[in-house]
Structure formats: structure tokens, C-alpha cells
Image 1 (cartoon, one colour):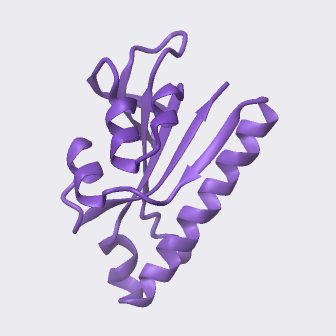
Image 2: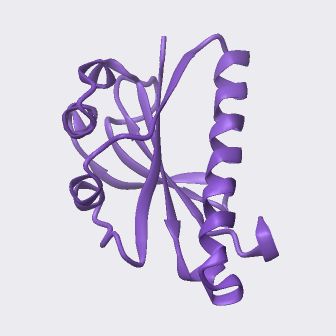
Length: 138
């Protein structure tokens, strides 16, 4: 991470995954675990609609990568955005590598209705906003 600022946050929408309830989770870096944000029957369907990609509703896991912008911009100002986008891309590539190693299908989605995606996971879009979505499943 540029300047060890670690701006990327990871949210995971789960659907039909053994051992986990359907809902939204946040990756807890310190404990290397998933924290339950809320249990919801089919959040993936809402995400699919806002990305205009119906097939996303069938995914078992939808990863939403967001950034807390000030973490990097406090050190690098506007150039910090470049570092943030690169970091999100690197993380997305690693998700692809792991999914393929597990023989899962994965597809990155860059087109979505930003303000509505942010709203459904309770982000303001200014201090923290979703940059990248990856759908994973069989």
C-alpha cells in the first residue's frame, strides 16, 4: 500500500455459502475475520440491479472494494487517488487468482450506480465509496 496507508476496505455479500448466513460482512483486518454487518436474504439481487447485470444475483459471493480516501490523500493529496485505484486493482487481481485456484468463476464489475451502491452498504460516497465489485460463484 502506498505509504502504508491501506485505504481499501472489503465488504462481502454472501448468498448460499455453507457456514455463513446470507448477508453483508466486513473484513476485519486486525482479527483476519468477517464481521457481520447485517443479515439480509438477497442483497446480491439489489447489487445486480444497480450494476445492470442480472447474473450477479446468482453469485454466492459479491466482494465490494471501497476506499477511505483521506487515508491516502492526507499524505499524497490528489495523487493519492492514483495510489488508491492501483491498490484496488491489485486486490482485485489477487481475488481473481484465488478464485481461479479454487476453481470458482469470478467477474469484476466497474459499472454501477455509485450513490445507490454506497447507500445500500451505508457509505456516504465522499469519505468512503465503493470503487470495484467482484462477483464470485460456481
